[in-house]
Image (cartoon, rainbow, N blue to C red; front, side, top):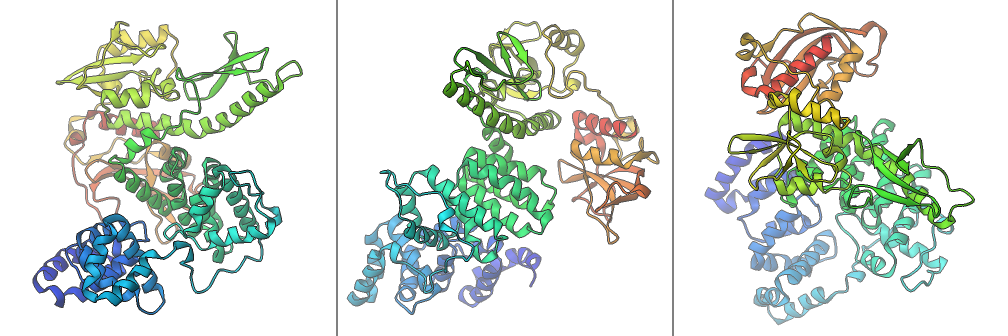
Length: 622
C-alpha cells in the first residue's frame, strides 16, 4: 500500500474500525506505523496496550507528539495498564519508551493517578513501578555510550566557564561532548538541561559552534549528526547566522539531507531571528523540496501560535535594536551620527543633518570604547537589514496585490510603531475600509496618520487596513496622493502610485485564455526575471526542458504559459535557447499539469489581480 493509498484509505479505515473494532485494529495499526502523520489520528478513540506502545514511541517525533499527548490524556488508565508490563520487561527500545511515557504521564496527570491505575497488578508490581517513576533521568543511558569522534580536538574548543566563573577541567570536556552525543532534537538526554543550568547560554552556544566547525572540517561525517542537533538546543542568533547560508548552499553541494535536518534546528532555536531565517528559506531557496520542508515547519509553528504563516512573518521582523522612533544615535564621544533608512530599508548615517556616504571608522580623537561599540553595532545591523529588506518590500507588494488586510491594532503593532517597518509604512498609501467605504491615509513622519487632505486621521476600530492598490484609489490618485508624495519628496519602495493598471477586454473577462502575448518571442532572460514577480518554471520534462512558466492563483487555480523551445533546467542561458515563443496564458485548476484543461474565467479573479496579471504580460512582451 502506497502513501497515497493510505491517505485515500483513511475514511474507509475509520468506518471499518468503528464497525469491527479489535478485528480491524491490526490493519489500522499497520497503516499508522507506516505513515503516522496521516493515519495516527485514526487511533485517537482506541485504547489498549498495542496502541499505548505505539503512542509511547510517538512522544519523541515532533510531528505526532501533540497527538500522542492528547491520546495519553484521554486514555490514561488504559495507557498505564498497557505500558507497565513493558516498562518492567526486558531492556530495549520498547522498555525505554514505556518508562519515558509513564514518567511523563505522572508528571502531567499526577503520580497518584498512575499508581491508582496500576494498583490492579498488585503490590509487587506497584513497588517495581515506583522504581521506574523515581529513576534519575541522568541514569537513563543507552546500552552503548557513543565513542568520541576521531576528529574531535577538545583543546581547540572554547573554555567552558560555569556561572560561578570556574573553568571546566580539560579532561572533562569529552564528557560534555558525550552528553550532546546522547541527545537529539526529538530525544534530549537529561544532562543537556544540567549543562544549560550550569553554564552561561552564550558560552554554550559558542562551544557548540566550535564543535560544529570541527565537524565541518572533518567533512560532516553522518555518524556525528548529533552535532547539528546540538545547535538546536544550545544555539543562539549567532548560530542562526552561521547555519542559514549553509542550509541554502548544502543542496547544491550534495548535502540536501543535511539541509533538511538543519531546518528543525532553526525551529528548535526558536528565536525571532531563527524563525525569520526559516521563513526566508521557505520563500527563496532554489531547492523546491527544501522549500516545501521549510513551509511545513513554518505552517506548524504558526498553527501552534494560532496564526497564519503570513501573520507569523509579520511578527518576526527584527527591530535591529533601533530606538522607538526607528533611528539610533551612534556616539563616538566628540562626534555623533544618526542612523536612518531609505525607501528600500538600506541604512545610512547623517551628521548634523547631512547624509554621509558611510559611517567613518573611529579616529584618534574619538572615545575608543564608545566609537568601537557604535561602529561594530552598525556593521552587524547593516548585514541584518540587508537580509531583511528585500523580503519585507516583496511581502508588502504581494500584500497590495492580494489585498491582504490587517486590523488597526495589528497594523499599529507591526507597521506604524515598529522601529524598522515604519520606514516602509511611511512611504506607502494605505486604505482603511469600514462598511464598504474606503479611506486612504499615510503614516506621517511623527507617526500620526494623515488623509489625502493632509489632515490628521484616526483609524476606525473595525477598519480593515490594506496597502492601497492604485486601481482602487480613484480620483485621489493623481490629484491627491501623487501630489502629496511629490511635495514631501517621498520615494516609494516599489511601484504603487505610479503603477500601471490594466483592464481586460470583454472577451478576456469571460474566458480562461489570454491571447495578448500569444506567439510573441521574448528573451529567455526575461522569463527568468518573471520569477521575481511571483511566477515559476514548471518541473523539467525527461530531456531536462522546462516548457511552461506558471503563476499560482487563489482557488487552486494556476495560470500557465507554454514556452517554445523551453528552458534547459541546468543551463537556462544556453545560447540555442536564448529566445522563447510564448503560448497563450491559460487558466487551469489543480496546479500545473500538461494534462490540465482550461478552467475558470478571468473576471472571477477580481480587478486588482487581473490588472497585475495583464501588467506582467505587457511587461514580458514590452
